[in-house]
Length: 547
Image (cartoon, rainbow, N blue to C red; front, side, top):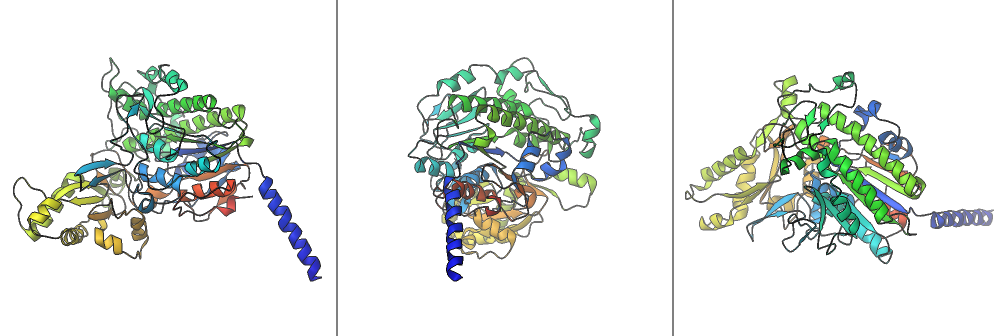
């Protein structure tokens, strides 16, 4: 009897292994990132979506409804680096959008590279030189003897670069009226990119109006249209219709391109560019698995300006739904959706506009931590403890992305230790009503996290690049650079809870309440293809979604 059981078991294992090994790999993997797209947009706005976009993915794909980033600095650079590498900034090096280098006393941009040359534009070069780990795309290229193509595009350079990785065939981002790249990837633009740039599509929206796409009753679920705490820059104004001209209504200036990006038409342009890339590069048609990454950034510009409860955000989501439906129809016509695997996610969410919260409850604990106020507070706290400085000196070199970088020259002149000064400053910051917690660099390095916030801060702490003091704000407080609009970058779920939906062959549709993260995307794709995980990966394989 036991022998029969073992024979049957062996047969089952053999059949399962044969099924696994002979399951066809997708011809094209499409990873779509909607910049600043909270998960609750899918539920709050679902009744207004059509059948071919978000609803299609929700109904036909594996929807991980409890997917959150497990780091503190929920920003564009870190988010896209997590999506591609499967690990966080403490390992991949992209812990923030920007940081400061005390040794050179220079600001560092996450995809900045002083040795890179712009290709297709006179400025705006970028590269993945600061990224310390491999990406899923890098491993795909290596696994196929570089036959697989990896193409990554976005309205933003950091989204395109960090999703594409180090070994990509082509990485392109929008700079004013063109899509460009850098010499890290190539020495000249392909003919199809030059043709797209010369088409004049980006300039064709000048003077166009962004009007509401739904009936007036649909917007009753949102805040009033003319809210005084919404932004109105680049000539867009606060209310519908928004005219797209920039600050000069007579001619195109750089402000026009910022206005364009702060409307659904920025996504329309990128979608048109995506179609050209698929056709020109013959993605998904070459007998090998290709990867195409698309980072739609206009959702972020709209969210920053008008806030997550605005009528503009609802309209942006509805129009994004139509853009995705059209893109999926294009993929089906060109390649066949049965030959594609589609991933939808986001790099981060966004906080409510503090004044929106206060307008509905005047005693709510919400507000802005203005940069200048914070700098003055830090300087005053250190002066009180260690004495006055010379008029031309300052205790602080930079405060950037929740990191405070101390002026080492001044500290040495005062015969003090950096850690001593940082410890005092962290203690002072913890006394501010806006600050949840703060740690010196040494304390962060030695920290054994005991709270969710501390765990997330630990993943956003890089030993070589982080500041001398690292802090997190309390819920509903935001870092203030302006007096209108909102931002993101804190360790709370309104900034961290985003879509993770996977559709395609080998994927079991359904909605899963499993604890998940965008860090799980790269390992899951690697497992599906049977290739090496990205170096340093921390995310898990989403087994529930695998047939």
